[in-house]
Length: 74
Image (cartoon, rainbow, N blue to C red; front, side):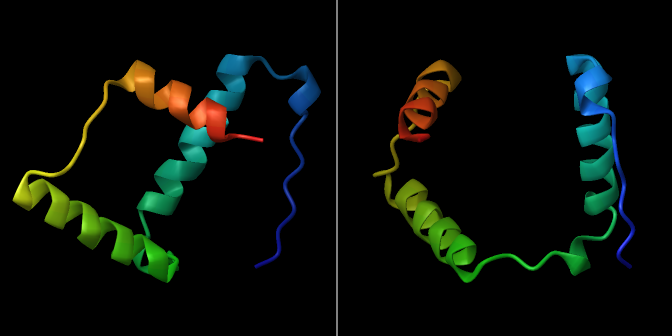
C-alpha cells in the first residue's frame, strides 16, 4: 500500500505531533512480525546481554545518555 498522508506539520502543535507519532508507533507495535530489523540489532543485543551477564556492562543515567547522544548527532 502506497498511501500518502499529508499532515499540516507547520500548523500542528508539538503536542499534536507527539500524539501522531505515538499513534504510528502503536500501530507498528500491533504487527511486530512485519518489522524487518537490521542484522546488527541482534548482534548488538547479544553483546549487551553478555556484558550484563559477566558484569562488564556500563550504565549511565538518562541525562548522561541524552548528552552523549546529542554529542554524536551531526
